Length: 439
Image (cartoon, rainbow, N blue to C red; front, side):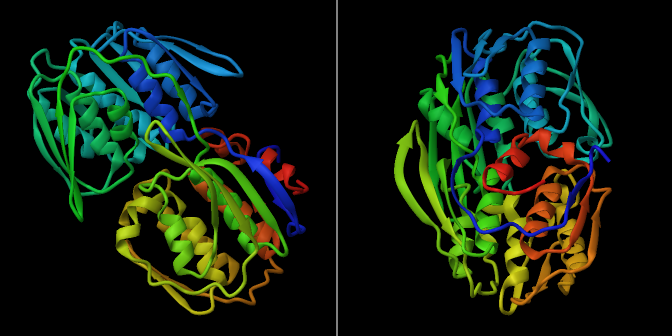
């Protein structure tokens, strides 16, 4: 029972101001780039989650020294291609971001490196990064394209031309990291996706040119010999903030301010989707920090949610928030349609499948395929039955979405694997208690 969360009551009206933990994508990218500098880099507000701890511990196995306190994280890098350990095994845990991005930095290593992960990560596809990285000259041995994989780097990497068609920031970033220490110009024609790596490269003055087209970005990177230190204050994660935004929208007579949230345009598809669903979010105190946009978000309870035929162009910039968007569609007055979402089933769990399961358990009619879902909303939905959520491969987003549904739609919920939040948002339950949830 210790790892089971039981929710029997809806959340009461609240008016609160909160701060959400640091952005996971940026935390992991900061650590990887800091390891490539020969100076000491310092980050404040780094996310303290299992995915980030996996990143730091794996870098330690590669010879990188770090210091983590309550106020900051400090990394002493070894420079480009400076990893020292030989024939090492790296446990990426649940982190697809680290597991895929580290492959880019390992394409130049002379020694053999094995990457393993937990049950969920071991089911995910790694060919998407292996195929382009092989073109640099690295050798990979895999389990049918999945973990465990073994990498043997090349001492003579060659720049590549690659067309990235998935809209995967992890694929794009792994290639960019491989290009860092590759002599010549690497060219990536990439379908648009989150651009934290590009912003880091720009801040670090890495030779890079980006030509932005309507449907893709053309990225040209020239390899170099060293990069400067990377001191950084990591903003709050919009993907984590989204749970509290949707909680507020679906609650009665409630208001919430979330401070210092990263509103990078490549991550804010959810805000555009909100607008299309007649949901208004006020963005206040906007500022620019080393290329990233940061702001306070003001949210209040909303009625009259409109159904949506979701534009495919918003998929990539809201890919981590669709389970929450499905909850909003469940309350909409009409039928919502989401398509080209096969990438959702490539996450920690088959999330499109789980989105449909949760809706069905709630009593919301939906029609799902392997890449689309149609949701028949019910503005009057009130759940009075018992619902059990389990066997979801410890996917933190399935767990947290179920909690939001329980707190806003009612019913008696038993949700397993409470510890799944440790991978990305360990303070989730404490933040709920901050705004008055009794758990």
